[in-house]
Image (cartoon, helix red, strand yellow):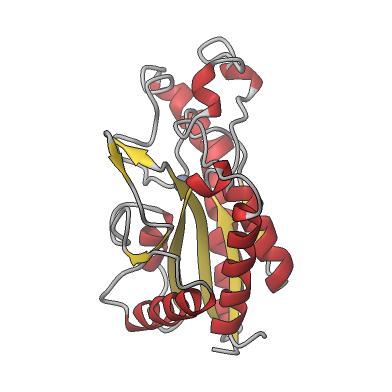
Length: 235
Ligand SMILES: [Zn+2]
């Protein structure tokens, strides 16, 4: 896949509350430092991958409690309990200011490369909580893709093998903790670009690595970037 262009994105990169929403959501609200506010560690990992792979990274640091950039317009989870009750006009302004700019920019970066005859590998970098509803999630890394798109399946299989070879203790699962075809940014982009031109993969990393003492998180970032380089034939 040497002729493939890599594009990295991070839809839940930060927990910033734009000034106009500080009355409904105080920047001191404890929820902002939790997974409900943003994906802990995701931007750091995305930056690490972008440096190692020399790939462009597009991200948004506005908290998903204002608007969730990984949901389609019409999805009930697009707005949070803080922004859903706002007047329709305000919600439309949110889309204009904080949703469409990121989504449109990513789409046009992909389109520019596709028009030049390249294939684009888009990796959306996310993280998930180590515990959900009282259940411990033991998986370390999830690779989300559409099983009906052969190139996506092939890429994830190869990357999974490289990851497990680099660190046999890692638990890598396909389409975990969510399905790659569930509503998300990559799912909506798949409708716009053909399978041989666009591969949309979400990378989900267990946040337990962020809280682990010692070199755990550093090692994980390294393992992810080196195995990705190997999968893409960069190394
Ligand atoms: Zn996320």
